[in-house]
Amino acid sequence: MDMDEMVLVSVDDHLCEPPDMFEGHLPSKWSDEAPRVLHTDEGNDVWTFNGAVIPNVGLNAVAGRPKEEYGIEPTAFDEMRPGCYDVHERIRDMDAGGILGSMCFPSFPGFAGRLFAAHPDKAFAADLIRAYNDWHIHEWAGAYPDRFIPMALPMIWSAEECAAEVRRVAELGCHSMTFTENPVPYGEPSFHTDHWDPLWEALVDCGTVLSIHLGSSGQLVVTAPEAPMDVMIQMQPMNISTAASDLLWSTVPRRYPDLRIALSEGGAGWVPYFMDRADKTYDMHHLWTGQDFGDLLPSDVFRRNFLTCFIRDPIGVALRHEIGIDNLCWEMDYPHSDSSWPESPEDLAEVFVGVSDHDIDRITHLNAMDWYSFDPFADRDRSECTVGALRAAAGDHDVSIQSLDKGRHGDKNVSLADFVEQT
Image (cartoon, rainbow, N blue to C red; front, side, top):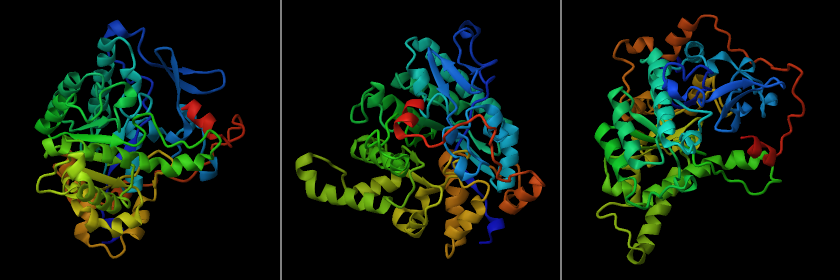
C-alpha cells in the first residue's frame, strides 16, 4: 500500500488539559476547591488541587522539539505546541501528520484519575470526574466527533459508581474508559476478587473498552534511585505485560468473554512469547494451582479479550499473525517523547514493507473502529481520510522541529530520583 493511501487512527495519544476546562462543567458549589492553574515566579504553569502541586512535566509535551531538548521542561503552556492543549490546533497537527483519528488519555489527573480519586470527599471527587468526562466528550472529542474517540475517567473507589459512569457516558457516545493496571496501589481490591463485577457487567452491556495505559497504577519499574533514566524508560512496556498477566490469570475474562481490554503503549513484540509462556504455565501447573480454562488455552482467551497497541514495532508486525491480526492497533503517542509525529506515515511505511493491504488496514484503523465503536466514514468518504488527503488539506501548517531555548532552563541532566519526585 502506498503511504499516502493509508488511513491512520491512533488509539493512544495524550492531551494537556487547558486551564479553563472545568468552567461550565463543575457544579458551582465546588468552584473554590476546583483544580486550577497557577503561573509561578519561575515561569512554570502548574495545576494545584487538594494541597498538591502538579507540574506539566516536559516529556508529556515535547512534540515539535529536538530530541536533545527532551527532559523535565517544557513546564509552561507557552513552551508547548498549542496542539498539546488546544483541540483546534491538535486537528491541524493531525492533518499535517496525516492522522485521521485519535484517542487521548488524560494528563494531570493521572491516566486513571488517581488525583481526583484520592480526595476524601467522594461526592466532590465524583463531580470532578463527571465534569472532566463531560468536558472531554463534549468539548474535546465533541468538537470533531469524526476525528476523536472519546474516553472517560473512572470512579475507581467504587465499582458501582464506576459502572454507573460507564453507562452514563455510553449514552453520550463514549465507549472507552481508562483504568489502572492494578487497583491495589490505590487501596482498592485486586482483579482476583468479585469486587469489580458491576464494572465488568457495565462494560460488556455498553460495548465499552477497558483502556489500560502503562504507568496508570502509579508504579513503574525503578531498580534504584541512582539508575539512569534509560532503565525506567526502556522497562516501561513491562508494566503493561504485568497487568496483562494479572488479568489473564484472574477469572475475569473467562467469566466475561465479551469484555474487551486494551493495553496501551506496551508494544506487541512480546505478545507471542507471553502467550506461549501462559500456555506452558497452564499445561505444567493447572492441576495443582486450580486454574480452569475449560476447552480453551490462556492464549485463546488473550486473543479473544485483549487488544495490543504499538508505536513502531517491526517485531510485532512481523509476528502479527501469531498475535492475531484483529488484536493489533497503531498508536502515535502525541505529544509524548516516544511519539512518531509528524512523520508517522513515513515511519509506518518502513515497518509495513511486505505487509498486505488487508493487514495494514486492520492495524491502522479498522481494528480501532471495531473495538471502540468509532465510524469516521459516516460523514466523509474514505478518500478524504487518507494520509495524502489530510496532508493536502493541512496546507503549509508548520511542523518543523523548533528549539525552545528561552534561556531560563538550566541543566537538563536529571537523575531518576529527581524525575520521579517531580512527577
